[in-house]
Length: 474
Image (cartoon, rainbow, N blue to C red; front, side, top):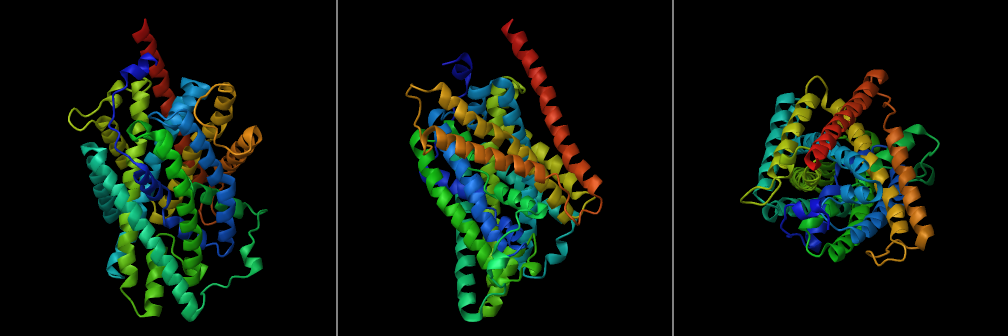
């Protein structure tokens, strides 16, 4: 055991298998992705299947084996460190953390938009109101932050309830969609020509990249490796269950949306309650949409709680390694949680949120934040797919963890190569401005400039951390 490992503050192991399953459902399944996919029509179902084969399953098998080989706190950071050293580990951990600081406002804004549907049409005028969006998002952000500071034993219930609410909303969407189809027929025509995506189109490739992003999040649970009971056994079980649940929700949910509404009428922010409102009216249950909006909003809260819980552990473990200020490695004297990392995360997210809602429409802010989240969040996944073959080769002949990727060396190379290529495609296509961006150059400058600024800031902090470590060793 290294000196750094000896000095690592001890966290409480409180998460079981179903806690991890619900964390995965809450973290991965954002029902807003159903509206993003459904807006392009029936071909989105084939894109979900391609995203499953090209990205979700490769991520699953890579995380399964890596978490078995190195199950400690930090997950992705720990695996990259073992494969490529401290510098690459810092880049992976920093960009993953920053991606979520950019992504939190995206999730918060979606929750703010969906919550307006709880009152039917009465509150929808607030959808573009910057004061409402800022107030809602800040209140949710800091409530989740404080709950995480109090302890994971309590905070896990937010993500557990959120996971259950997301699953319930998805079941209602699929069930009532099937009932509406049986009684009234589908609002969208499902033909073979409409179901086949045009993979030669840049717009289709961009949508495929976004769908791959929707499948992201299986790597989050192992970041909490130091707080999971028997992680070598529980993480693989949770991942296998989660893959089946998540893929079923996304595919069946998108189909149900298209049954309820024509693709052209689906709203990006409020498509789920909008669709269920339409189904409810057809079935004679007008309150159905608002009730489901409440479930979607609750699921959104759980997802935010899950991501805040996991990503706060990255500045914590990097702080333990002293590449970020050592204060980030501090644990609360009473609750045993990384409270400084959580408070820092909440503060930076608040600043990004306020910048997003000022001077932009909610739709424009939504698209910009999505692309920045995709670029920053997928960069560390390149390390994930590259780390497994390296660690496998080094461990050849030694009993380290469990070899879980089927097909031996060929299966490992195929899964990691496919995942790496899809991830790279997602990063490249996210730089293509949408057709309705107004000024493509301005859009690209906001997305790319923001990403470069955040990565550059991290490299400056890393350089200072290295000097601090060297000074401490001399």
